[in-house]
Image (cartoon, rainbow, N blue to C red):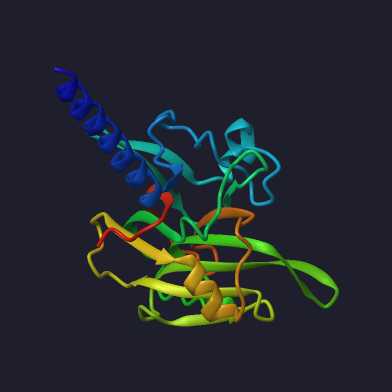
Length: 242
């Protein structure tokens, strides 16, 4: 009887250790899946570009300048942009948010593109629009004695090919095209990027362990064309899905 109890206890300890190992090996930091947001409103966890005020608190004409809205299909709730002029939404990593991208280097997110800004090109000042983009913003760098954040911006481009890399703001912003044109348009697609590897390759050094923020932007104002795109399931994790 004692032997059986001993074996049972060992089995429990083993299972607990396996579970803890799994938690350690597959860490995740959830940014937002929008499931707790209210349909027809702006998302509750996102701020303006500078991370100062939540746009969901805006009213009147200022509220109308944000063309984002929480939408729902069946049981899934997601964020949709539908309009011409875009504004950034920012998810700042405040002091109470624990993030270490050396432990969770994979940025994962879902996009569904509906309408592209016609002829847009991120490499052109006059046509610098995108159907969808997500930024990782890091510590501030300097341009002409002025602080400008270093960032990696992943875009869905109207015209540039997947894999195209651009450098802007004297090298402080790097753009990587991860989706292009009408390929699989209208369907949800999952994207994963190793932001630590991308940072090292693009900037030539190691990134801070904690970024400043995640930013979203869809925009069609330069081409004066309507854009429609959906965002969902944004998170950082330790390993790729495949």
